Image (cartoon, rainbow, N blue to C red; front, side, top):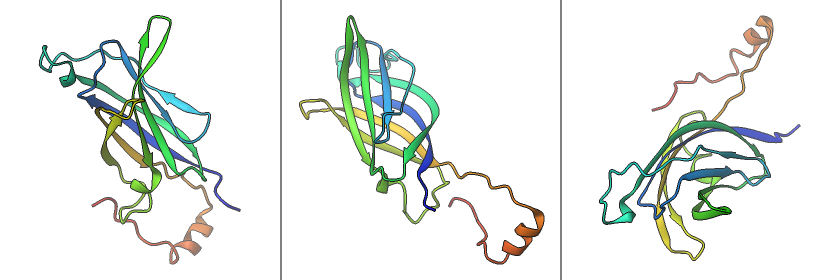
Length: 159
């Protein structure tokens, strides 16, 4: 029996140098119809007031995303609410292989930063996020656990 999906814990941390004037939020999708959306935030105002490219947006929101086992990428899309609709600000499609299957255990938290591109392909800021695979806890009887003790490698945690 194969694995049909895996659960990722994703924390959308912040975005910087985004050209956005309205409230912005992030939509995270893992090659399925399911998606997670952050709350909207405004520019923190820490950037240069004359240069709208030096904005800093901070979400610090954590959520669990169920991803199909066949999924090869995750899409992060920054959008802003606009009167009568939504305006896409920037998108980043990240290969799952960038944070899975490395020499670090899947359950370790990885903090990553990726450049965003608008729909014309122009650079529009950087998105900072963290990701880790949620390892399901297994319940088993004590006798079965004792039998498996020799077979299971000892986990030493993240480096």
